[in-house]
Length: 196
Image (cartoon, rainbow, N blue to C red; front, side):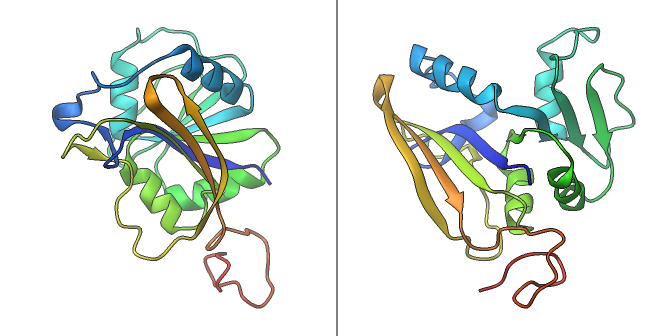
């Protein structure tokens, strides 16, 4: 099964952007470039919501070529259509789509963008890892890394690396509520989520 990783740079108090989307506090150091370069070699699918797509699309021309070997899936019930190479619109249930995508052949799946979609997918049990590049700044308010998933989600530390600028690059594995699509044994509820 493919691994779904949600990750983002965030402030110490858990925001991925300040008020009005401000990201002037982000540090794109050589360490970050190395880590991101290594990470992008492991994925061939990106899943994002409408708001993240709108920011990403605004930063490139409409005829920009697709990233070779990577398909982007935009989850939205309100976008009318997407006419970009390598980009597909997902109108239905995002969790069901990701649950199915995990079973298809391929490499890792990057869950990109704001905490709304990530929180809903974490609550649905389809996120395997959570990565954070924690920056040494307190923003006080802004766009949160995660919202309330409606239940406890247990994590275990997979790695932690101090990187340039006083940042910490941390990866957690989800240990409770991990989706196990296709498993039909005791201890799995109807949504395919392992229950303790």
